[in-house]
Image (cartoon, rainbow, N blue to C red):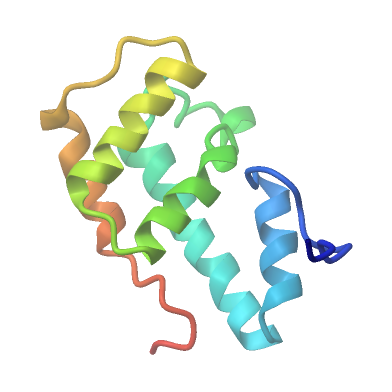
Length: 123
């Protein structure tokens, strides 16, 4: 069994861990681009998804940052809008203890997320 590199995180990446992990793995230009992509994802989660209604709360602008990494990975894998919507519904139910939003509500959010270009080095 190969030893895991010391700088590789264990388990799911959340919030700042995602950014640190990206910075270690990609050259500076790609790292900067990855951070920008993550910012775009975070903005959609806050302004378009916002299941707990915190977008107007100045102290909660990072409320959904811990979910960016999972969405980023789905987008990078080419997930469908239905898969992304299902992921968001799962977060609502399992992580937040909420009744999940309807697919009619979540699919437009997923479509907006899928419009984000997540390929590093792409112009």
